[in-house]
Length: 277
Image (tube, rainbow, N blue to C red):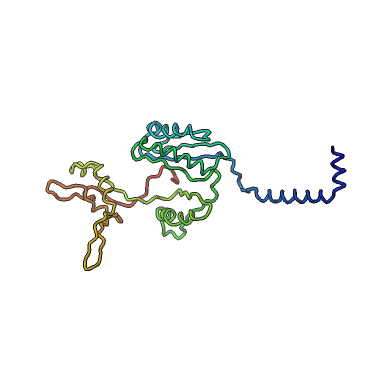
């Protein structure tokens, strides 16, 4: 067999040369189509489900959030494993799919199963999917440093969250920009418990009053001299003074009780559970 192959190749040099050229061209094309990566992605096809339920214990989150999500995804198509982790205030569910499963197809299937859980989870609990990236997708890290000393950590974090983040997320191929460190700016209402007890106001009344006051209300259209004027009530809170003027009730004489009468309003950082976050 080998002798005949050698003899045939010697009698047809043009055909042999043509086959070599075709194989060489096909090999060059195949090499150009091979995806190259500095860090090869060997991780599983994975979809992460993140659910936040502030102030709840891991045991309660496991029973009310993690367990229903995990059991609903066990029978999903091409699902290989489902792992759930319950921590204080948060729940993580990792759905591992079979190899060669398209990531976007897997995410769409997970969303379909999460929609079936509507009404079965506690009120106010909404599961969200993690970014469409893998474990080796962390490609760049940078730090905001103010060498002039004119900006504090809260201002640098606001610059990152409200300006730089959106510019970087618009870059093709970027799935998520995660920020750590700094201080997340928030408006803090420190209620005086003695004053609150004197007015016989529960904390829920304060929370509802602030939530209902931070909104705009649409009105009717007023027509005057052939011109229409749109009437709307502007109620978005923009400063500490706006929060202090929110009424939470009335006293025995009918005088409105304002936030500033029962609490101190200030701008401060969000609570951090670690050095950087």
